[in-house]
Length: 67
Image (cartoon, rainbow, N blue to C red):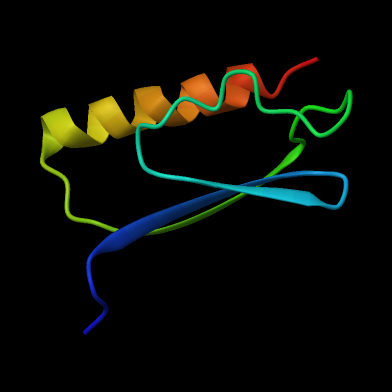
């Protein structure tokens, strides 16, 4: 059984940023580029409230990556 964890990786060019769940990605840049790729490897159990909260967090990540 997989250990319960969540790893989020954002990439800007050749620079990689590893962030913790619910850590703000705001302001992350490599030179003038914001992260434009994301990898989410998540093995967590959510109840309905926790799932909605996590989905909201993913929306924050997506919005912070927009140019």
